[in-house]
Image 1 (cartoon, rainbow, N blue to C red):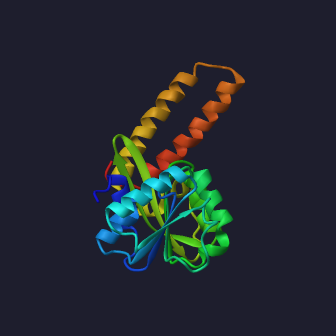
Image 2 (cartoon, rainbow, N blue to C red):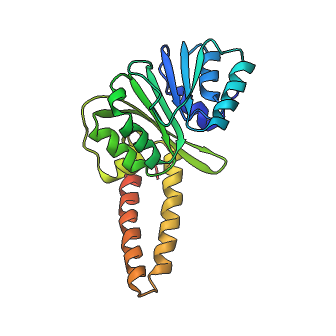
Length: 232
């Protein structure tokens, strides 16, 4: 099973051994690949929609992994029982949906040794939720694929850390390690932001003034993040 660059980066964060719970499994690619690599012993692949779950079942049968991967129709973690999994994966969803799944399934989260998340929006809200609910951001990665950028988080139970604004938006571990893909992304964001600021500076409406204030707030956070990189 050949994973995409994004899913390969997601799979790398899974700790070897144990059972993977893949929420929103879609085609079932990640659990199949991890079993091929003998990185996990079993998996529970869940999806809220019957169509993707049926495709996952077809792929599981194709790779003869029916004895190792169980599929379940489930909205989030609703079809999961306590203690059934070791690693929880939620990838390819918006940040708001990721937070809803975590919130509704919170009583089950203490049974996992790690949460591996790849939210595609509202990443600052996801990081804030994790910190507020007893998780520590142990690892982060940031990959580019086909012109799009994807943040990936590995959270484990741990002490709360107080993050600055740029760390919530762009990742404390990414900034600590001066992740080069993040730096590339930040520079592009800064260029786009500055272009919008110049365009809006000529407008005097209340709506334009509000938007200009928001962009300048974002600019300050971008500058703080870029200041963490020693090579500019």
